[in-house]
Image 1: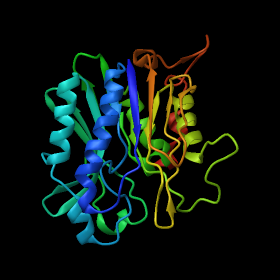
Image 2 (image 1 turned 60 degrees about the vertical axis):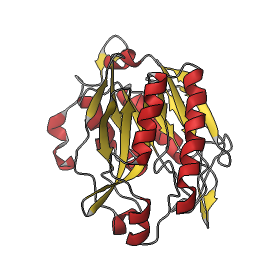
Image 3 (image 1 turned 90 degrees about the vertical axis):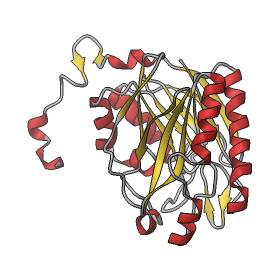
Image 4 (image 1 turned 30 degrees about the vertical axis):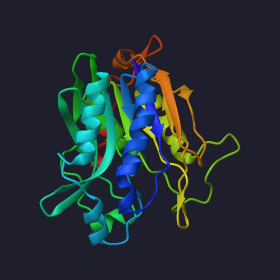
Length: 279
């Protein structure tokens, strides 16, 4: 299955949301025309990431049937594929950091970020849907999603593996906040190695779509990448400064076997009796 990644470089300000949406959509269309069946966009894909007040969060948020999701559904219908993208989802008095799967028949499902980062803890509600896995109709694929900071928690990745995910798609915004090193000599950020490690430990592809550029004194790291079930980087990482696209072919069904060599299995070899301190 061909999976594409859109790495965005958006304009800040509420007045640029529609412009950003269209630019991201055009990049996604390029990937669909190149054969992508799934395209992944970043966290908060159509607008700035950094927020400084609850009022600002409310202005940028949309309901699940709002203009961004409707646009992604139209894109998915046009190309008979799937768009996975991040948004600020407004439901009643709550605003969630949400990743949506838009498909030819509408919204397939959504995930709400559980582990909130930095300003999110002040203005957003933590996710309340757990770690769902979604079947993509006609593609024999089961997809799990995480968002950015979630990737720091191995329990989240392992939960999706046990729920039967064939791959984990990660709309993200990797930032300079709290980091002493942004990229190493190979252009990898630490989150790249985190994704590779998760793929290695779970035999599970990891597809990470980030943003590039900066907002004020916060640098975005870019470095979007696609890692296969053997922990091989098969596309990326992208630069930290420019918008970019990635496209790679992943055998999602290959991740269903957790066998390692002749003797070992990543599920069967677990020793849960010794893990009680985790919970």
